[in-house]
Length: 211
Ligand code: ADP
Ligand code: 5GP
Picture 1 (cartoon, rainbow, N blue to C red):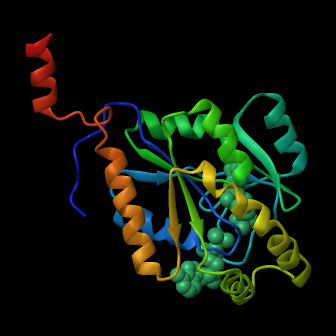
Picture 2 (picture 1 turned 180 degrees about the horizontal axis):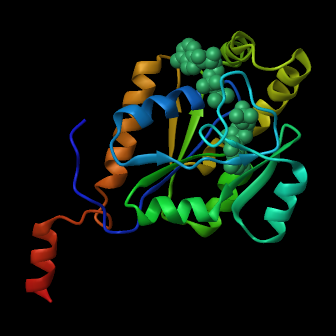
């Protein structure tokens, strides 16, 4: 993908939610590889790492005690209890990525997205849906990362999460993975091309002449 103009200094924030198993992690990991200047903000969580997950890469895995002390110190931009575990977005990490000129992609549940909507009104909110509930169940089971009891919790919660889709700016139906990734790239490109974001020399020139 070709680089587009540098942003205006305020990084774009892309907030992605989906019911567990819809393919959000798969899509976001692919995006990270192909979209320049886009970084995932690594969340903190109290859940145990899955096989293959690396501390500080996929999540920062911490104890409930440490998580609660971070809440008390106001270190989270948002946090929520999801499937019985705590998850949160660090204010410090958002600021660091922004100051380095990155656009940020956040993978948060619908509670976290609602909190972010109140603070970051200009953020772009994207909801990923599975093609059907049957396929969602199949994907969750095929991932084989949760116990049967955990799969049940996630499926029970899925419909509640899906009902929030109307609060998002864009919906992607993750049927074909390649198509879903392409659509995400289109949304990110459009977000970066918003008038308030583009900061090319010609715009600066026009502004300096126009006063
Ligand atoms: P989430 O992060 O939303 O919980 P994952 O990205 O872990 O979901 O995806 C759940 C499972 O579905 C994984 O095994 C993944 O490889 C698979 N998957 C994701 N997208 C697709 C797709 N478009 N078609 C088929 N399988 C998919
Ligand atoms: P998983 O355990 O499958 O990685 O994620 C479970 C859920 O937690 C997903 O819906 C994911 O979007 C959400 N999640 C991950 N990180 C955060 C976070 O920092 N804040 C909130 N609110 N939810 C998160």
